[in-house]
Image (cartoon, rainbow, N blue to C red; front, side, top):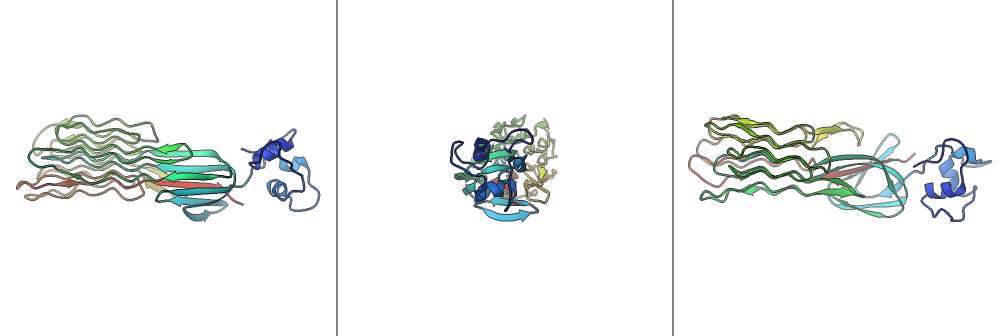
Length: 328
C-alpha cells in the first residue's frame, strides 16, 4: 500500500503503513516516520508523506540487488523473515512433472505452474517459502507394465501458489494434469492432459496419427501447449515464459519433449528448462533427460529398445521462488 497522494493523512494511516497497530503511539519526529516521509531532519509536515510507501526489510534465500530493488531467490525451501513490512513482488514456480515410461514411448512431463504476483502485502513476521521438488524418474515396470509420469510438487509463498506439473502418459494410459501444465499423451494414449489453475500453464500435446514407428506427445509449458505426435514424429515440449524479476530476462517452466520408436523423430524440450526426449536407441533402452533444476521444467521421455530392457523416463525440474522489493 501507500499513503494518500492528496488530502488528509492521519497518524492511523501512517501506523498502518509502518506495519504498526493503527492506535499505536507515534510522533512525527520518530525515526520510522522520518524514514517513511524521506525527511531526515528539520521541519516535517504531513504533506511530506503524500504517496510514500514503507520500504521492506527482510532476510532469507540468496540476496542480490537490481537498481533500487533487493531480490531474494529461493532454490530450496526456507524462511523469508520480514523485519519491516510493505509490498513485495514474487514469482512462484512449481516442480515439473515426469515423463511417462512404457513399452514404446511415453509422453513428456508438464511444466510447473508459473505464477507472478505484484503488490503482495507482508508484515513484520516469518513467512514459509516452499520450493516444490520435481517428479522423480519413471521406470518401466517390464512384462508389459507401464508407468505414468508422476506429478511434480507445488511451490508457495504467502498464499501465492505455483502448481505442480502433470505427468506424461504411458502407452495407452492417460496423462495427468495438476496445478501447472498437463502431461503429454503416450504413443497410444490420445489426448494430452489439461492445464491446472495455479499459475500460467497449458495442456499437454496429443496423438494425432497412430502409425509406425510410433511416437508420443510433448508436455505443456507455461507459454504454450505441448507439441502433438504424428506417426514417428514425437511432440516437443511447450515453451516456457520469460520474466525479469531478477533484473535479467530468464525463461522458465518449459514442457518436456517426447521420443519415438526406432527411426522416428525426437521432440525437443520447451524453452525454459524442459528436457528433450531421449535419442532413439536401435537395440537397447535409453534413459530420459531430467528437466532443469529450479526452472519447473518437465521431464523428457524415453523408449524401449528392440532387445527390451527397462527404460527410465526423465523426472521434472525443481521449482523456484523469487521475491523482490524496493529498498532505497
